[in-house]
Length: 221
Length: 251
Image 1: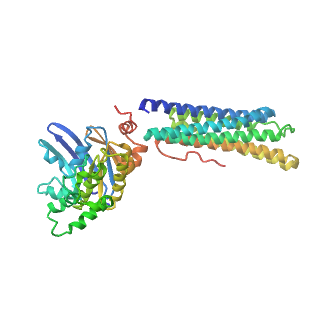
Image 2: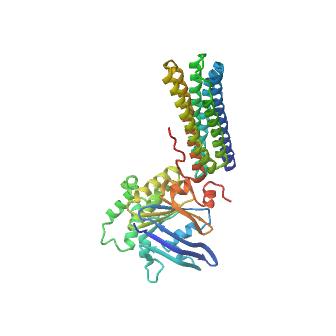
Image 3: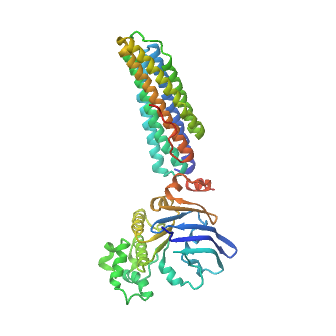
């Protein structure tokens, strides 16, 4: 493969990462919609779509291997491919967390709601937003933006803390709510883990730009 | 550990053309240092300054110092034959003498008048073993060196260098005329040799530099642009020119 076509393949590879990223972002929002609106059809769709996300991840991984084998990339080319290999793992895992939320939505089914959901949708919105911006930072090689996004994980942690305390109060007051409240805590946990994965992506952006591995966000959880 | 070779503001001129500019580098003992760069960048000329191989070319001029164990090899009174015994060289094309395998290896010790002191049979066997060639030729060391394959010839040339027990081995594209299997053998051999020798290799094959060396220097237009740990040069070069060259975006 001549060099110009290598450059093209490298661009295409990063476009594919963006495609995977938007599939995952959509999964986060849809799983929350399904939970909020008790939309079992949508929840089942998110669960089904997760295998698409998995397939896309392996597809990208194979393209990385092909470029490594045929091009023996070095320096920034190598760092981009190594970053892609790591980012797609994080994306796939975030997809799994979204699937987890959809499964909880199915579990809850048509049970009467414990309370109107406010902070959990906020967490989902924020996580999706951080995810999208982290991939923008990757494409733009913007280490500063990546560091900043990483710090926003504190907001997710704070929301999770709030959700947890609130649901704990419900459970303490009325043991009959324990099952439903616990399930909602799982939802919060899935979102909190997803945001941590976004900080991993941010670390990879810094790696691509500076060549150094640094831990830039330490989650409370 | 002190560096085995240090150059200090070393420049080399062919007539009016400056081929090596102001190069200062420390070459570590018992490690492999690779020099990379495009054709005509001065890396081979630089390599040849390290054992004064360029002396034989007319109208050339050296400035600066090359210190071998802290002794400047360009000082007056340095015995060049003794220097080249300490700093041996392997070339791009295998160049065995049109003599037997045995005679090729025994040649150096004989020339240096060591044959009376040494058992030549032992020296030849030891050198051929160290060059990973013994097992392939032990039954017929009387055979002509030219009857060997290219890869074997190159290992014979390495054995010939080892026979005079050098401290440093300079290799100028030692694998460029060899097939991948022979190249791999030479690369493995180089790794083994670092137990006892310091190796400096010039190579056009960047992956070879990445595979075999601990240190890499990138030359461009006679300058040493960047020098550092091989893993750093190939994963996070500091200089844009190095990045452009090794990623193939040069020019």
